[in-house]
Each structure stands twice: as C-alpha cells, then as structure tokens.
Length: 371
Image 1 (cartoon, helix red, strand yellow):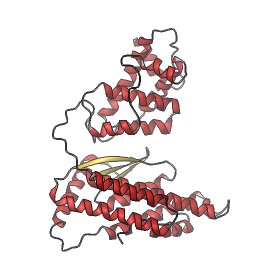
Image 2 (cartoon, helix red, strand yellow; image 1 turned 30 degrees about the vertical axis):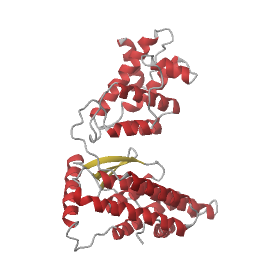
Image 3 (cartoon, one colour; image 1 turned 180 degrees about the vertical axis):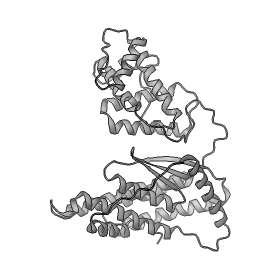
Image 4 (cartoon, helix red, strand yellow; image 1 turned 90 degrees about the horizontal axis):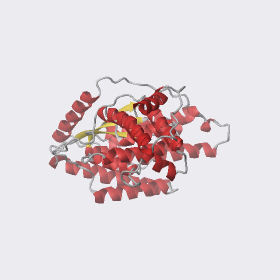
C-alpha cells in the first residue's frame, strides 16, 4: 500500500515518472491508495483557504476532461466523509454537480472507469493528473471553515429570494435582447432593485463582512477583472486580482451578491459589444486585434465605474444611512487589511485609441443606469 501511494505521489510530482500499473492489484488496495494521496492534498488545500469551486476551476484550466471528471467525483466522496459542511461548501458542490452516484463502499476508481468505459489504469492516470495540479497550488486566505468545523452562530444576509429572482430575470432579458434601449431599461430596473434593497436593509441588519472569489475566463482577464473591480468599489466592496484567474472580493454578504450579479451581466454585455465591433469590421481590421479588445474592456470598466458611482451616491444629508455606511466601510477595510497584508498595484497599458473610444461608447449604452 505504502509503495503504491509513493508511486502515485512520485508520478504527480515528477513529470518524468509514469503512473503505476494497477490492473493486477486488488481493487480495494488501489482505491485506498488513490483516496489517501488525494485526501492528503485536499486536507492541505482546505487548511490553506481553498474551496471546492476554486479547485474545480484550477483543474479545469490546467488538466483534461477526464481529470476534471475524476476530481468532481473525488470532491463528492471527500464531502461525504463530513457531517458538518459550511453552506458555501454545499452550494459549490451542487454548482459543479459533485454527488456520490456510485454505491456506498464501492471503489471509486473502478466505478469511475466503468462509467466512462475506461480501464482502471486510465482512472489512476486521471487521479494523478488531478494531483499534479493540486500539489503546485499556493495558499489562499481562509474565508470559509473547512469541513467538519462546528458552525456556531452562522448568519446569512442574502438578497431576498423574490428580489433576487426578479433581478436575475431582468438581467437575463437585458443580455438577450438585440435592442439597446430595451436592454438599458431592463438593467436599469435591476440596478435600482438591488441598490434600493441593499440600502433599505442596511440600517436594521448587523454587518456580516466576508469574502468571495469570482473566477473569470482567462481571455482578456485583466480587462474583465477591472470591470469586476469597479462594480465592487461602487457597491461598498474591495477587490484583489489573482493571476490564478479570479478576483477576491471583500464586503458585506448582501453587497457581494449584488457585485456577482451585476458583474456577470456587465461582462456579458461588454463581450457582446466587443465581438460585435469586430464582426462589423474586416478580418484584418484593428477592431479584431488583441490591443483593441484589451483597450475596449479597460475603457468600458473605467466608464462603468463612473456611472455606478454616480448612480449609487447617497445624499450628503442622509443622517440615517451615512453613519451606517461609514461603519461598514471601516469593517470592510479592517477585514481586507487582515486578509491581504501584501498587495501591489498593477497598471495595464492602453494600446488602441479606437478600442478605448469604442469601450467608452459601449459603457455609455450599458444597462445599469438608475434612470
């Protein structure tokens, strides 16, 4: 058993080493070894701030479909070992479809191979591919208790489900309609709903400062991350960009939910406008260049930030909200400072004036105005 575990670990940490052959070994022995090495990696990651969706995204970006499939099933098995899981854990497991579909006690390695019409050694190779990604990951700030941790006094202040459903419906329509005026009216209503809802609840609810991670597509990552940053800033949150492919957000739970919703919608609108500009131009035109699209997104983010700050401004004579906003801003800053002790500013060059102008125009048409 120990020799098999060592062979699996060696194959994961040394690219010249091949995964061990296991077809002649007992199924239980192979499964125990695979579970042990993956369990060791998982335990290290949970201790150092990683969550199921984070692991899913990083494997999706750095390994093949077989490895990703094996990871999802391994996460389901890992979660089944614990009676206590944070609600964020349960939400993320459901989001990636991690559930134990095989008979309890059956060896995952053989069950996975059977389901995918593969050999056992193919399943072992998939497990090694997962492990290769996991062993190289850095530590992250801990934002959710690891599995098995008692969840005393856990409180959630999410957007009211009725409001959330209305907002999602409005944003979905705004993203799908080909008419800019209709899209603007729909998203304006969505922005109005979430902003009013957040401000109405703010004076009566205790602050629940926390952190979330928003993973973004790698293509034009800097520009997309900047869009998220300005949305976060306008909604009383703070953001840190990780080269791994995500933006770490800090704020009140309600505000973070709003940031995720609006960022997703604005990125859909930005991408659609950016691609449309290229489709209207010729194949070798500047509008299809990398420089144009990067500049487009940076300009789009800059203008969106201006519009959001104006839309979400609280009157200076609002004696009810201003003290609450100041206290929450302080709580967010303190939480941020405790989590991120070493951050550096990053600048991105704008290399296309046409892209900058087009991005600003698209942001002026984007659907977020409060009317």
